Length: 463
Image (cartoon, rainbow, N blue to C red; front, side, top):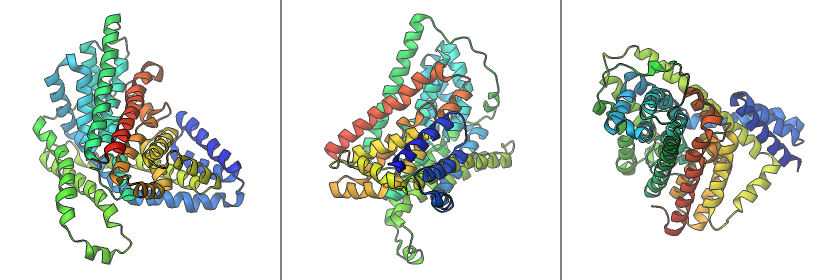
């Protein structure tokens, strides 16, 4: 009983202090140690930190550090080369100011689906979105929701092949790849995209009827430097994004399946080849895209060294934040009370592990304020159970992969979420002004999409 109370108390404290702006890097280990201490196992508090916590953190880094690093560097290269701005300007010019909301959603979607970090996208697109919404007389308070819809939802969790870290995390647990359950992923993505666009457009139409307009805002120009003057054509700017998805698909479906890894397995007997191929595909595609982008812009870089270094630094905080959350989850999983919680979650619907999985993923994502953090904690503690249940009930692991990722993108944007706080800060807006619309397009509609995918998957299987 004390162990369960310790788990619940530390989870509440983790949410509270994260919302107050304290770093997860310091919060996670403190809460992990506190959970062990409050559960009555005083003597094991420090061993749980140095052994369990740090072991889980280092294991996460070992698996996913290259993807975080390459993704951040690629995003910075896209931004500093002018490629991101070229894509944004082209989409905006083609659709016009009357389609301000759709333009922002599509630009963010194109960039994030191509591998650009959602934070880089937010910084790069905000100045464009601000000008566009002002011309169209659409309330500025809807900008965060439009950016979030294009960056935090369908391209992050649903569309097949997305190189987002969330889509990579389940790979070693289910032996899948980033294209898992592609048709269901597309259906779920369409529910998010169309539902979110309809909602935001209805809010804009209502505001227009009431004469609200863009609103009076004191906008500083701190992000104006993102509107680079590099002359990059749309076609050239799109090449690296296409390469990320294209090479990933080529490796996944054409090259790796026809390779003989027998000698590799002999040389590395502990290596899970099947669970690693999906990760290798993402790493190689991002490496090639980065290299091609550098070559395409040779002679046009203001300071390539600075760009690469900045991208490298951009990767540090996100991966250590997520790794710390994984370490906290591992410590919680080692407590006696967690066994009771785990058994209750797994027993939600024994005949359909998709329901239990979705609840576990979105709940932990909500608690941590992070889809990648919640997904990592849930799979590191329950991944083996879900794979076993899937095999026993005949559920395709690819469907388990897609539902896990999409569910993690449900409650991950509660008010204490670091992504939400950062996005609102970029847009110079408050929770009171913009959070309701943001919550609808990043939580309510995505959870509806999860229900659609679970229903279709349960009826017809993975496709």
